[in-house]
Length: 320
Image 1 (cartoon, one colour):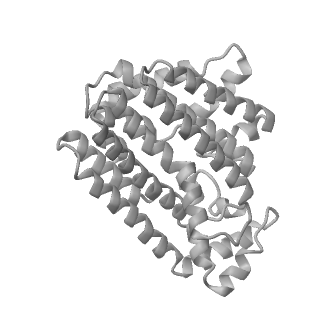
Image 2 (cartoon, helix red, strand yellow):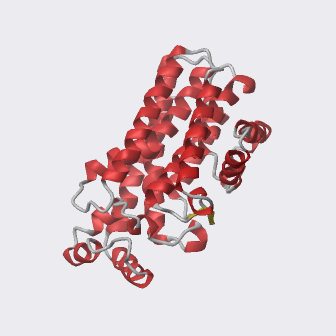
Image 3 (cartoon, one colour):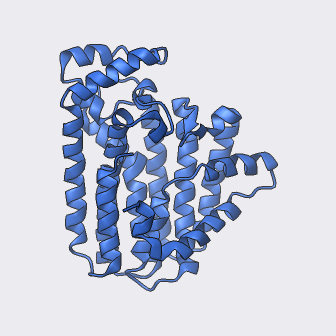
């Protein structure tokens, strides 16, 4: 089953959020509007807004309140992508030129900052002090994650703990908070919104590990960018860490830099796939997924819980 079919009953509300996103990024500056719209139209799974809406279903669901949380969190995610592309010097995202490639780094940074600011504007419509504290802390952590990503580029002596901390800040926290804030906005009990945070966190960790695996196992067409792009950009991901336990693989991998040829990268990708790195990465992703599903068991039964389960299984086992 396709991902969007799993939550097709939310289609009208998701369409509303898409329109809100378009309205949110409008600016008096034509250049800012054009650059922001370019990113928005590149698409995306919209996992964070979907998780906001689903979590809100555990309480008193009001799309006109919940949409503000969904838009705010998707805007934060979008802003972080723009900044990531500058850090990684990435030319493509989802098969389309990045903002920094189409314009330049300066425009990309201003656009990312603008989108971040718009996200905060939307959250002011939520009258929950706790929600604002949670979001502020999350933004701090996301920003620290971006700095850590710069610091860790081409650092081949990092360990598993470094990697897990980085993907927590890069991906898992925002997905976790999407679940938690969606629930808080609909007035659920603290016990439930804390469980939803943990569910989102574990799903987010599994999601990012799977993403990092796909960077080596999928095609350029499926990825929307060349395979092995993460490693070429200096991002040491889980499959790389596991592969480097093989001495020959470690010798070749640690020579990778911005000047490494496409042909050499293809050889390295095949070498990584010939080790047990991909299988071990899948195993860790599954462990996080199992934790997420276990947390889910403690939540009220119904269509929302089943949809969360279906999406979690899809995320952890997707092929691209």
